[in-house]
Amino acid sequence: MRSIVKFTAIALIGGGIFASAVQAAESDDEWNGLPEGIGREEVFDTCRACHSLRLVQQQGLDKYSWTETLEWMVEEQEMDQPDEEDLPLLINYLTEFYGTDKKAAKMKAKAK
Image (tube, rainbow, N blue to C red; front, side, top):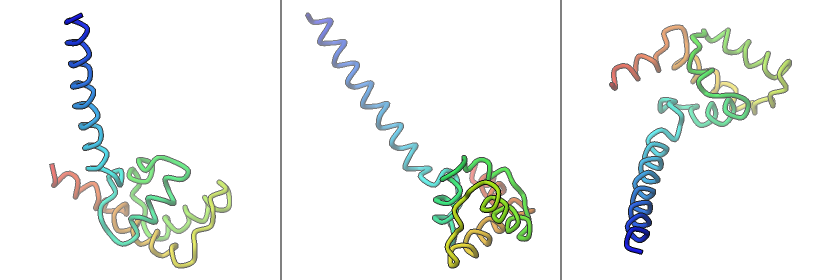
């Protein structure tokens, strides 16, 4: 009987610690690594609707290429057309952080 009580207590404590660690990790990276900036929420919601944000984070496109990519996704991949006011936010954010200089990757490397 004592061993069952001990096992149950250990399982509950271990489960609580694990759940706390998972919750902390999720809250630390609720934006999946997207740096803070104007347009982050729009990029998070728009891009994540169809694919992993890692796909976005691996790019290094200039403004023209991001614009063309978004147009291609709408025309060929059945992505919903972004609202007129959101489109410049998306393109500017993507260009700033995931442009040819890969600013987001440099920021992440500095933070380590």
